[in-house]
Length: 172
Picture 1 (spheres, helix red, strand yellow):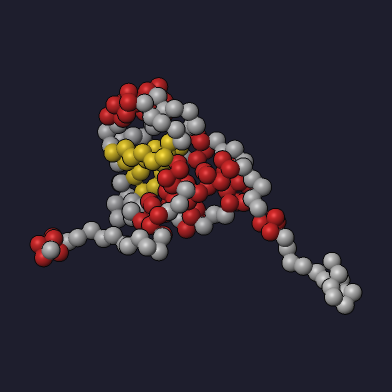
Picture 2 (cartoon, rainbow, N blue to C red):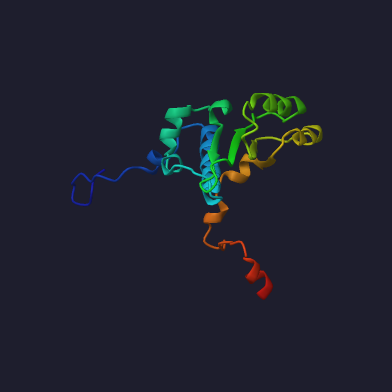
C-alpha cells in the first residue's frame, strides 16, 4: 500500500489472523473444562494452575480438533480432606439414556473412594436415566456444556458469596 508521498506503508496484522481456525467442538470442550476446573478450585479441590492456564492451542495439541469424551474425564481430591474425591465425566453428544448411566456406573471402578460425580451433558437426559442416578452412593451433579462456556463467577457484577457462620446467621 502506498502512502501520500509515494512511500510504501506497512500495516499491522490483519484481524483475520486472530480468527480461530479450529473446530467449535474443541473450543466448547476447552472452555467448559476450564470452567469446571476453576469451579473445583473454588470449592477447595486440588487443581493445578497449569491445567487451568492451559491455552486453547495446547488443549488442541493434547486432545485434537474433535476431542474424545473418554479422554476428557478427570478427578480431583479435596485439599483439606484427601479422602474426598470428585470425578468429572463428559457425556457424548447424544441423548443420555439409561444404558449410558448404567454403563458409567460399571466403568467407575473405585466408586467406594468417590464422594461426588459431575456429569457434563451436551444434550438432554431421559427421566429414566435421572432415576438411575440413584444407583450412585454419592452426590451427582449435572451441568449442560453450554452453561459452562463462561465462568459467571468471574463477572464484574457478580458478588462473591460466602458461607455465613452461625453467629452471622443469628445477627441477621
